[in-house]
Length: 309
Image (cartoon, rainbow, N blue to C red; front, side, top):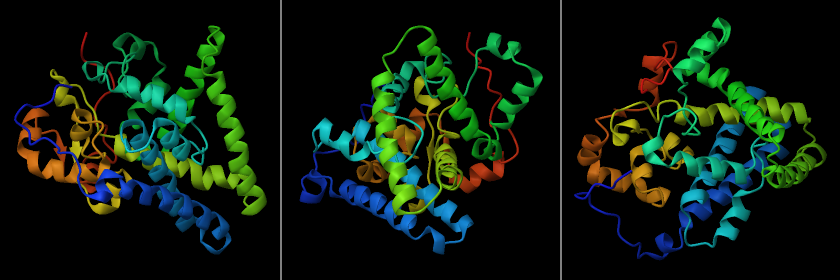
């Protein structure tokens, strides 16, 4: 996505804590410490509260992985990869997420099915070939309630179909990533079962699925079709609860224009350039996730048939 020439550009950080990205170190320490602490004390926490806390921690870890893909440039690539690599999220190898997300950032391809790896749109000819029941499920997934409930299942289904399809075609390029992932997951589940005394099924039902669900909240309204690439990326002006959870990636137009900008620099950049950014993305903006819930909790945000030929 082309940068806007008249924006107040981010400057090189001079303060020590900015130069060495100490807030990101703080987030990393907080995530792993919270994960271990909640695991070790889960028997003393009612499961609904446990699920909410676990969802926040795992979605927060996913945000940290996203930051490691684009930012944290004060560290060499191998080190920031090593820090975020542990698969506590339990379902997707970091290497595959990094590869897929990098394709998503080809901004001229945003929203195009088959080209944008994170699109919710489907080709018109594919849609017409789906069964009525599957179309109904996909439409429900376009409501916020659907995205938070059936969304994780559809996301896992897509992962299985993509990866199994590669194997059927004789493409084994992802196998090393999966082998490393399962080795790391075995260590994670050893800690979960042997140290924290938590069944694997409990970890996946009360931790992993809610974590995926909360992560899908951010992505629910990030992109839509627009004639100009800039009009396809939203911003959600939310509070610190969600801002910290998503590492301010909810101000998504900033991220697509400046993907390497450190997460803690995004709010200030947004405030300084808000009007110009809104002109760039066609005022594709929301005041918070409560507004999004009010508008689309039970109503599809859009019919997922891509309008462009």
